[in-house]
Length: 262
Image 1 (cartoon, rainbow, N blue to C red):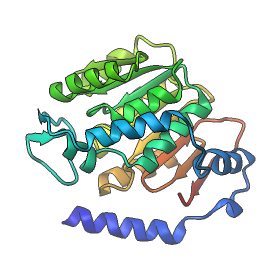
Image 2: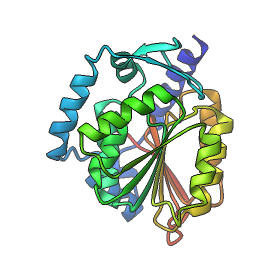
Image 3: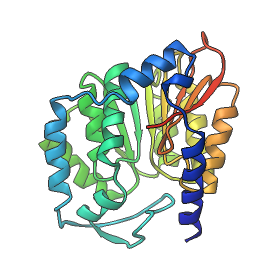
């Protein structure tokens, strides 16, 4: 209940402080906001992805959940239906399509996806840039196995699923890759884990890397982590869209923070 009230208060603060494009004086952020963030462009891939979403929302498969993170907002049960996972823990169509547009726009070669779950959001990342290599990390065995079957059915051949505790698998994988072009953080929603993942991933950034943090106002801990990331002198442009936060490292720009309507 405390978390629910915190979330409501955070949203009220966001609602009254968020701006639209008329407040943006950065050409890069203005164009990104107008052409990618709020522009509801249709992609043919959305038709297939919406069908998959519809099927998952009626899937009565029971999965044993070994949650190594902060848990679900709604259901803490150790056995959950796929339909419930997608409904209660999955990203909305609105946010999923935003992730698709951002990925499609920046065309990352190497993409880090922290928190595979049953694989739906990962599919949006995969289909947005099919030339990318998507390293998708998940700690729960049952959801990994379910996601692998989903990826095979959807022909998401560019997804490499890495199973295990992300505290072990992420730093090990980062040592093997040359750079990170885009990272989506949707795993352990705690302050400590978010900061750990940030520190590990920032080792392989370049000027055009994009970090996307999910549920930045989910809890006091997540909000604290997000504020520290905004203030970090290694980050340059940060954008608060309430449900997600965007982080850019473009050294040609002044350090700026934006709170924008979505």
